[in-house]
Image 1 (cartoon, rainbow, N blue to C red):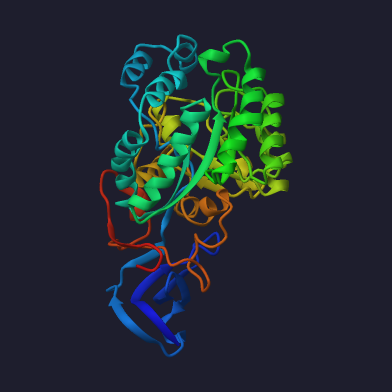
Image 2 (image 1 turned 90 degrees about the horizontal axis):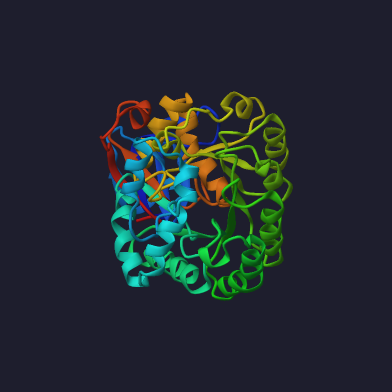
Length: 398
């Protein structure tokens, strides 16, 4: 078999089962950007490769996937961090003009070049930990031009770096000041003007919304979903973060790729997600940073076999986190996820949360996105804090 590159003498975590489907004495072969063989070295066909690398017993996993970020934005909200330390709640800060609207003002005032420049260091942090695919949401512009500028900046990041960027339109993130008291009027503009303009420019891979007491009602969210479906875009949802709005069940009824946060998810929501195949994306960085105390219903999600993904939720207000490795550690320590659940959560389940069937596992036909780790045990990837054991990152076969 002709191929371009071979990585041999490795231990593989193929992520094709709940036990990570480990293969000892493993080998991965790629032709172009595609894996043509991943398995035991003695089972490999005869290979003719331009380049062969001895991994010296290191572990290979699929490249990591951060499936929920707000990476593109201007400004920061460090002062709000101080206010929360002094006792203010997320809702109080939002009602006082802070929160998402605060970042909106800074983002509206930033050029596309400035948005790219400020996002690149955050993206580089993720890439440096073996991340090969990143989802980036809009939602800090909240008007036509600014939302388009955010999504254009996100697309540019994928041209500036060797990484795959998936973009999500999150216009229904908050009600902008010019529509204060008129969220339905803003929804009209989102559905009839802004989303069509985004679609016309090919800037969105999915549509998201913030279904919450300080965000949008389930009825308003459903309007946003209907608009997305008219344009052939899949949906996902910020659901049950601060209260139970039954958003996860709504998302599941619309075949959502994922419902995210989920601290207040109930049994009916779990059952709906399980029936629809909707991924539960957990965001332990936001849970930690806002000092939340209500845990997502992990046992119920497990019992219903709802796929669990983990993401950084990198954003300026509630999760200024640019380490997917630390997000895994938080998922383990705060949510009591297992090592296997954490690793599956940033590979195959994260891919599923983005509707991507071509990555997240080590198998023939998959994209050759790899992370090679200098660890003795896979648990080290999750267990260490402030230490990056990445040996090499392979993106699209190179």
